[in-house]
Length: 187
Image (tube, rainbow, N blue to C red; front, side):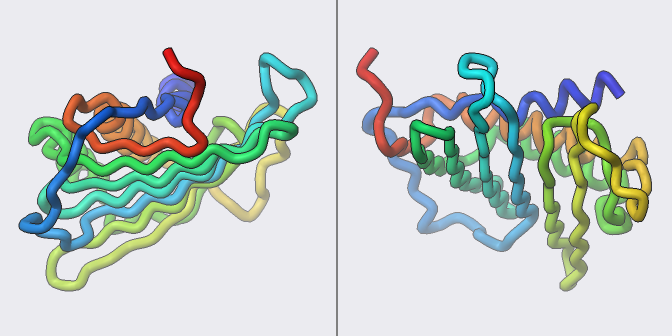
């Protein structure tokens, strides 16, 4: 349980802006490989009682070309939008691909596990038109589990961890093209 919680906490790795970076996707194979839609809701540690909502959309293509759209909303502070475009490192893409194969991504079903309150929808696009979609409901210790959903298998939590590891590596790539609006304070 601690391992899956650690992986889920990586959902909160911030995207940092890059100045002058451009990512040319015009010659990339943009066939979809993985699409992950995540929504999490948490209470601010810095401002108790304020809710923080994060919506993230990660698209990974067969060439490793990846995009992230992340929308953060904080009560009283409004929205911040981040857009990221990058080519993942081959080692990171291979690790993600291996984890998906090893953990039978094509056969996973909806489930629930511990984490920040929210939901992760995973869309996998295999070869020859194969496809699987499954959702992982994230429950905090204060959230009642959904009695109609089974606990996630070790395979499903390993897939979630691999997705989070891939995302964490992607957002720190030096060549990533990142736009954040509204921009944060100057450093």
